Each structure stands twice: as structure tokens, then as C-alpha cells.
Image (cartoon, rainbow, N blue to C red):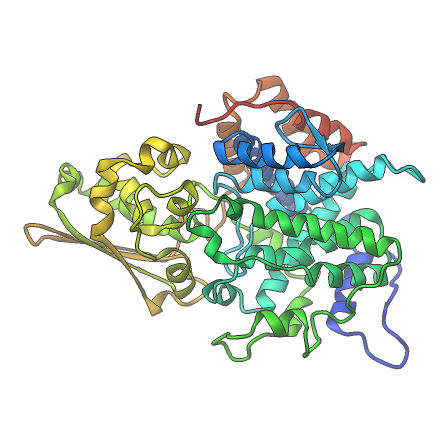
Amino acid sequence: MRPQESVGHQDEPPGVTRQLSDWIYNLELEDVPEEVRTRAKYLILDGVACALNGAHVPWSEEAARAVLGFEEGGKCTVIGWEKKLGVLAAPLLNSAFIQACELDDFHSVAPLHSTSILVPTLLAAAESESNRTTKPRVVDGASFLLACLVGFEVGPRAGMALNGGEVLALGWHCGPIFGHPAAASAASKLLGLGPQQIEDAIGIACTQSCGLMSAQYEGMIKRMQHAFAARNGLFGALLARSGYVGIRKVFERPYGGYLSMFSLGSNQTPRYQVQEVVKELGQFWHTAVIRTKLYACVGGAHSLVEALAALQTTHPERFADLSNIQTINVRLSKPVFAHSGWPAIERPMTATGAQMNCAYIAAAQLVEHEVLLTQFSTRALDSDDIWELVPRIVCEHGPEFDTPARGCGAHVRIRFEDGYVLEKILDRPRGFDPPLTNEEILEKWRNLTEGIIETGRRDRIEKALLGLEGLKDVRVLAKELAGMVKNPLA
């Protein structure tokens, strides 16, 4: 820990935004436990796997064509493409690629997808630093890792201060909202901002926070909403570095503040908890509890997938003819039900809508025995077999799941035509508690990149990311991430 520098004034105690800014400024890599640093590297590896896997799925190619069509070229890498864009445009595509297949990480209590925000922000910031016309600076892997750790810690704390999943239940896309201060904090750390500049950057980012959850039904734009946080957080840090003053005390302001505004309509008491922003900083590490996904769908449906898979395994005779299923009732927590329990009435659904909808996800698991990217291909989205089941699947709110430990749980009850009933309750899916091991994330990385990039290139990226502390120049990694990859759906 470097000698402490405070942004507080002598005549007033520092507020939580100032306390957070102090912590960000003073944090050094050796302050972070080794196992947390290691975990962060595997999370980054998982995010990069998702970016490479998602760079050329159809909706990502639509995004790339649009952005490349109106943005001037630049010096920042677009992952999986032989193109470069400006410092604020590149994060839009790279984040959308990470989010493209719904396979990226998530925080279960304060829902956000951290690497889709932090990796694009920091990759662009690092390349921008080395290309500055005045005082260019080579960014090394240790600085990249430390900045990413800052973001991993700040995003969930902003979410916890807003009572986590309550924001999602209100209809906000909570990940981009929690992600704006995370991106600003991480970018500020990488750019070497002072404490007051960090507070300004966070304030500039928070006033841009956005994201409507109605994007989940049909719009491709759902894939890009975390990208708004990546871009806007970096924008805030770049402005603050130049002396542009942001909102001070943005977390604690009762009038027009980040927490007071995004908690409007909350059913929680209190609506927000400002001390959560700085609670146990440097003691409890949210990095260690960020989850990674095994299924290409909304994280809240993973227990549903596994409950059905378990019943299929233990009672195969019951699922030999799916026309014998009369009804399937699914109980979910309040946030998951609000997010993903809506009736699926439009056929075919878009890939976005299908990946967010529990009825479609359940039908896909029963028909195809897995929920991976191919279950959201054009073929599957209009499958007669899947759509014969979808109307029989009804979701409802189960208050018994409205606790942090069971928030991603599911209770599945299947009634067959002969009156036979099967039930399965799962409090949490695999990879929830405990999270997937580093070895399991490595296996996922290799599976996702198999066949879409050459083995040698994959191995070089893997070596660079898992050895970030020894990487002298992040541009070495960026060079490997640039260049075309294949479409996993082709």
C-alpha cells in the first residue's frame, strides 16, 4: 500500500465516494491476496474466450458492420476482426462480443457481467496510452490486472448499495448501471489518476448510467448495453484526467445522486445502503465470488436447466415421449421471475429473447438435452418440437427463493398425462457456490476457442493472460486478439 493520500478536506470527513477514490488510488498489486490475483486472471481469460467466441455470431456481425460503417478508423483493437477503431468506439464492439452468447461471468447478488465491461475498457485504455501524442506510456500486464481487480471490486459494491437484484426486478438492466462506476474506477486506476480525478471520473460515469431491461425481448441492443458502461466509464476517466470536473459525492447525494435515483420505486427498506459502496474494501474480495457460466442463457435459469437435466437422467423413460408432458410449473425468485419468467408467445423468438426466457430454455433442454449456443440458432428458434412444449411451461414467483443463497434457485414440477408428477428443487446451480474452479474455467476457455482460432494463437493468448504480471506490454496481447476468428455457428 502506497502512502495514504486523502481527497477529503480538513473541515469535513470524507464521504463514501471519496473513501472509495482513496482506496482505488492507494491500492497496489501486493495488497491483493495471491489467490484473488490468480482468480482475476482466470476471469479475464473467461471474458476473452467469450469475446472470441462471440465476435462473428450473426448479431455481432450486424453490430460490427454498423459501427465500422460510421466510425473512423483508430488505433484500438477490435477483438476477432482485422479492424481498429478509436478509443471510445472499440469498447462498444468488444463488450458486445463478450455479451454476445450469454456465456460470460456474472455476480449473483449484484447482477452484472464484469469482464464485458472491464476487459474492453482497459484494452482500449492501454492501447490509447501507448499511442498518446504527448508522453506516451507502455502499459504492462501488472497494471492491467490491478485495474481489472479494482473494477471487479467496485461494480458489485455499487450494486449491493442498491440492494442488488431489486434493480433488475424494477426493470432496469442492472449490469450496465452497476458497471458505469466500475469502468470509471478501473480506467482511472490504469491511467494513473489522482484521488480527486477518480471521484470526478466516477461522477461523470454515473450520470451516464443507463439500461432498460425491455431490451431482452427482441432487440440485439441488449448485447451492447454493458458496452455503454465500458465506453462511458472510460470517457469519464479521460475527461477527468484533463481536469474536467464531474459530480462530487455522487453516491451519497440525496438529491439527484446515483443511489437515490436508481432506488426509486424499490420495495426494500432502506431503498439504498450507501456504506455498501466501501464495505470491507481490501478485506472481502468480490473477485473471488464472481461466477462463470456453463450454459448459453440467463444466469438465473441455470438451476432450471440442471433440475430438468437431473430428472431426464434419473427418469429417462418419462421423457422418451415429450407429448406425454401435461404441464411444467417453475418457481423462481422475484428478480429471476421478473427478468425471465414472462410468457413466450412470439414464434420464432429472437436469440436474445430466447436466451432470456425460462420457458424456451426449459423446452430446449428437454428436447435437445443441452443449452448451448446451438440451441439459439435459427433452426432451434423455430423448432416444432421446442414450440410444442413452450406453452405448457408456466413460471411463477416463489418467495422461498428470495434470499441471496437461493436467488438463482428453481423448483420444477412436471405433471404427465397419466397423472404422474416429478419434482426437483435446486437452491443453486453448479458453479454458484462454490464458483467454478480455475481448472474448470481453463477447460471452458479451451472448449470455446476450439475450432475458431488456431491452437498456437490460443496458447499464446492463454500464456499472456495467465502470466499478466510478467507481460511487459499489453499491446502484445492486443496483437494476438486482433485478426479474424470463425463463427461458432457456421
